[in-house]
Length: 378
Image (tube, rainbow, N blue to C red):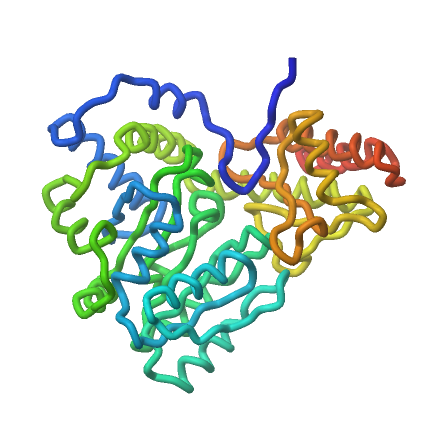
C-alpha cells in the first residue's frame, strides 16, 4: 500500500469538504436552489479576488479565462503588451496572435521578474497600446511579479491591466481593486483547492467599457452574455454544477481562516521548502523573485532531473513537477499552494532526500528535513 502526495502546481490536493460536496446528488441549474449557490459563490469570489467587480464563472480551464479576457477586450489589429518570463507568459502572446492582435513582447530572463519601469516605458512610447497582459506567479519558473507596482504604471494610461492569477489566487496577496488591476483571470485547480474545470474572470468598469468596442469573434466566452445572465443570478450556458457547489466549500474554508492567515500559511510553507533545499546544498532557480506558490530548484550536476521526479512519483508516491521547455530536466518544482500543510512538506523533502541519496548525490542525510522543521518550530 502506498499513500500518494500531490505537490504539483496544479492540480493540487482536495480537502475532504470539497470531495464530499462533489459527491452530492446533482441538481438542475435553472432553479432557485442553484441560484442560491451561485450567489454565494459570487460573493465568496469577490472576497478572494478582493474586488467589488463581478466575477464570472466559466466552465473551462484557466486558459479559457485567459482567452475570454483577450477576445472581450480587443479587436484584430489592436496592440497589447505581453510579458514573457516563462511558459505561461508566452501563452498570452499565443492567444493574442490567434485573434490578430499585435503583441508587443517584453522578454524577461527566465527566473527574473519583469521591471515595471519597462512596462511604463513601452506605454509611454506607444499610446496605441490597449492592454498589458502579465502573470502574477509564473509557475514554470517559480517567479512572482510585482503586480502592485505594475498597476501603478498602467492605471493612468488608456490601457487596461490584465493579470493571470491562475496559480496565485488564494495563495498570495492580490488586491484587485486597490492595485488597479482591471481584469484578473484564474482557475479552480490551484489555490482554490478544486479539480480543474472552472475559469474565473473579474472585470473592472474600465475594462467593460473597452469590451463594448471589441470586435474579436466570440460566442461561448462572451462576457457581455455572462454579465446579462449574472444580473438574473444565472449563467448563459450550462455551468459545471458540482464544481460550483464544491467552490462554495473551499471559499468557506478560506473565509473561516481569513485571507491574511491563508497568505501567511503559504509564506511559511515556501520558507520551509526553500530552507530545506538550501540545506541540501541545492540552489534556487529564482533566488531574487521566488514565489510562495511554487519553488523551482536547480537539479544538481550529475543528477538526471527527469529520473529524479519520475522515481519520486512512481516509486514513492510523491509527485512534484519537472521543468518545462528549456528547463526540462534542469529544474524540479515543489508546489506549496492550496491544501498543503507542514507535514506534506516534510514528507516531500524526506522523499527528495531519499531519492537524491539513491542517485549518488552527496549531502548530510536529514539536513533538509531538519531545516524545514526549524522553520515550522519558529
